[in-house]
Length: 273
Image 1 (cartoon, helix red, strand yellow):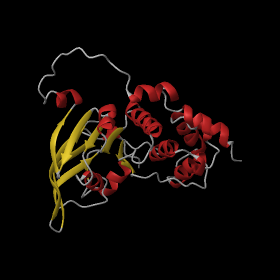
Image 2 (tube, one colour):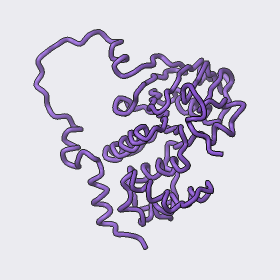
Image 3 (tube, helix red, strand yellow):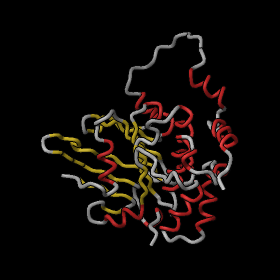
Image 4 (cartoon, one colour):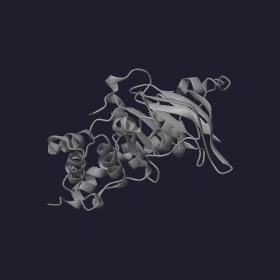
């Protein structure tokens, strides 16, 4: 049975006192946070801070040494099957079949999940993630950003209420990152709850409704971007001539939708038949 967000109340993700150690290495030392339904929550931290360990625990891939966690109202330790029906996990590298076309990847996953009309499901997702023009091309010809968008689209088959995105833009070029950011924003716009881990400050700033900074296994702060900025002393008002940023230059050249480059790739690569 498909588990939907409407079946339970409370936060989409609830984490209380998570602890995890590997021998003498304490990775998590009492992690607490809640994620509201339909929001994007960023877990921000440097490499080794424990971000992926948190994701692995709340997605039932790893058992915590102490503490509790629930997803969509289900306990990750005692109701793992219900949790897995409620979530989708996108890892640090796109899990797509490069031999198949983009549409074939989506149809395959829909069939594996025994969903009706997999072709229509695939076509709707291709349109939603601006991949229709590349639908018939082999994924091996896709750019990094296109592969990531396809990976996220595959994660949404079956309409999971919660999705985990573990460093979704790692290794991508600036245009690919912008494409993925747009895809993640689309998730929240359709009511999906997203837990995003990242080490990029600008990524958390661009995407997240709330940001938690994880450092040495503990949540140091947790709040909205405005709340976090208020932790610093008030800014001094000074006259500064505003110069264009590198982002301004980049977007002016490639277009603010971040997809002009893909259109060029589509035209040059042709269509696989």
